[in-house]
Length: 115
Length: 110
Image 1 (cartoon, chains in turn orange, purple):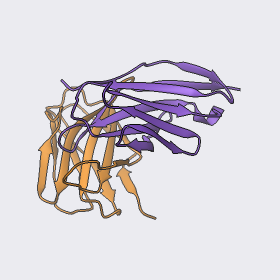
Image 2: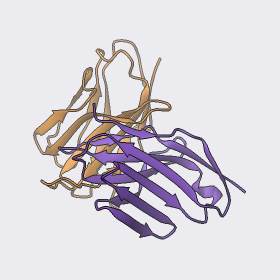
Image 3: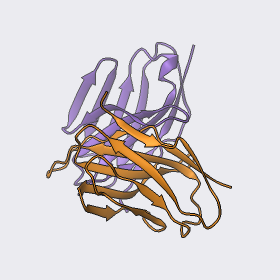
Image 4: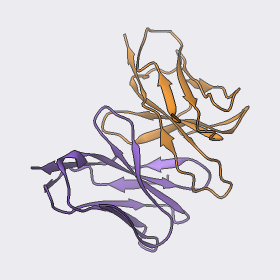
């Protein structure tokens, strides 16, 4: 089955702790994205990557870091610098098109809670 | 700031009726538009994409785009209780990232 997997489904973070959210896709998509969703809010872009070993900051990158060492994987680290990390984190992927128009497909999400 | 605006609702329609969901956007150069459905506690799933002015139909769903008015809508015919969800409008601005509205909550009552 082709798709996007995210783990864990729920993640608890203690004060001062860095945590890493996993995102894997087997759709052979070039581009991958991380969004954050807060209650009653739309999705906000954290980071995105169009190709391996390259990524760009989105609108709310502060307190987060990413890597893209493999086409299939785009892990997100929530660092201790992110003071309000409680949210629903969504990973997406798409085929890369230079002219845009990519359709993004979402994984099931990870819900991060602060202890 | 590039904005995507949606009425938060809730929009309540009786079963079998047509639900009309609306979205306006501020960036005139936007070229690609998407509607996603999100059930409570779940991730968004793609319903429709539309790139050209006019209507695009897929089953019970019709997306309508008017670039001159910067307006995109989603019609759901023969609404079912299973259509009750939040509908997110997304716009692809310059570059590669989607800009999302906050979503409209739809409630279909039996």
